[in-house]
Length: 331
Image 1: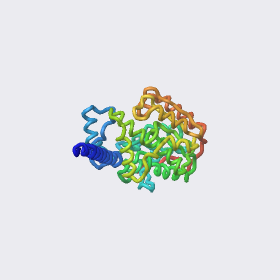
Image 2: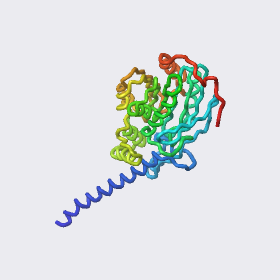
Image 3: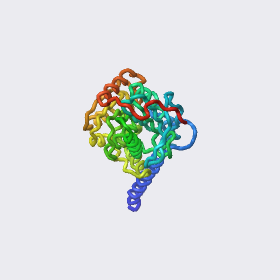
Image 4: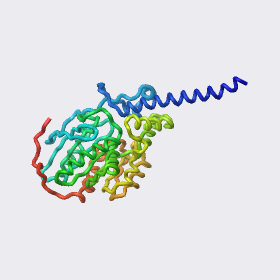
């Protein structure tokens, strides 16, 4: 009789130990995802690029997450500027053009930096726009080492946009992935009002993007994805379950061009459909067949450029800017 009574207690103890262990693992992984290191080397490959053995190793040890760096600088005239934001000092590259139609602020994705958007910036300049490329806090030349995958980064978007809006001309935002989610939050919760958005592959919510990562690893997402999101928020002082691009989209009226690749392994069609349906303001969507979570100009350069040009064309007016005569590079 006594032995029978011990079994429920032992099972309960095992359940508590297992749940505690899962929380420890989730907290460890959440910290590695949101805190870049100073170690040299490359970031862990995307889940879909890993072998089974590599996936197991990552599950046990966490990802390698060195702070992203800028390996290139613009070939066009630019100057480096520094802006003070709530999360720390931001480093940005500003490239002006004569008689600009406005300025495009460019924001990068997770584990990236402003140098990854140089092709896009050159395209916007050719279309007649000044450009401002910014490293989010924790990335590239900006201060710190923390990345919250869109939450705190929204304050960086707000700081950059408001700095530009103190200057003459329309302000547009071009952002992809994490940067696109940060933009939506900046507009929904921080009151940012650009002239228009061009957003590529924003994820639906933090929980959905965590679940997609587990799916890419061919590992059940519940409950670890939920625990990962919980600890990611706790460790960085916000409620990560509220990081939701679809909810943000329903609260903004900014004219928005939403773009998505049909072969994206990390952002699904239902997520993209939901965000697009939620957007309240004037909107347009362009899908790119066969493109993944990657720059769409790689496979569809002409279509990508034409779509952006036509979308922005009706929302700009040519006007001179006080600094439009060209800028000498500063390092």
